[in-house]
Amino acid sequence: MPGEERGSSEARPIGEKTREKTKASNVSMHQLARRGMSRWELEQVLAKREVEPHLAAAELDRLESVGLLDDAALAVTLVYTQHTRRGLGRAAIAQELRRRHIDGAIIEDALSEIAEDDELERATELALKRVPQLRSVDDEVAERRLNGYLARKGYGSSTVRQAVQAAMATRRSSGVRFV
Image 1 (cartoon, rainbow, N blue to C red):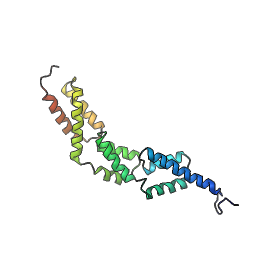
Image 2: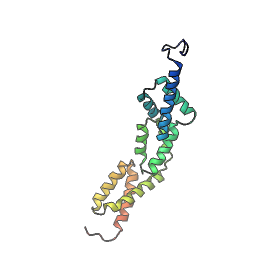
Image 3: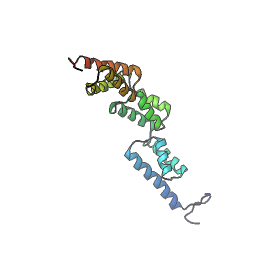
Image 4: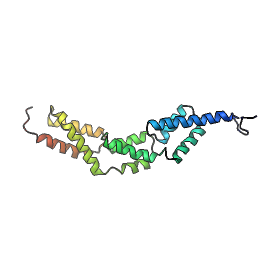
């Protein structure tokens, strides 16, 4: 019949296949315009929108081939933004990247962008910023709270220890305190 594909088990009209491809493309572009997504995340969105798996795979491959879908670039961007803007440490960033189903090797490469000195510097900045908020509590409680705060941010124990020591040193040298 005219307008139908021959040899296809589904024998769908050509116009309908074109609409399905357009739908996959529109959904993909809309999602990528909103925020960076991993291949897995976009695949989930397409499945939720009931795009056929073979069309979704073709669209994902097309987007990767033109550079609009790149898990490695997304990982590097997330490492930078999560570390500099949100102050997260390696562990928290790695957890976020795993949640987005980014490959482990890509995660390791992206995390190598953070030098240990940079991580310590950022943790110290966060601790120094937090110390004044803890002036109403004694040193032991302040130290414990700073430790918890930095640990939740994903910093390693040695980094947390050094950052807390630096922050507590400024607290102790701030003059006479009456408790």
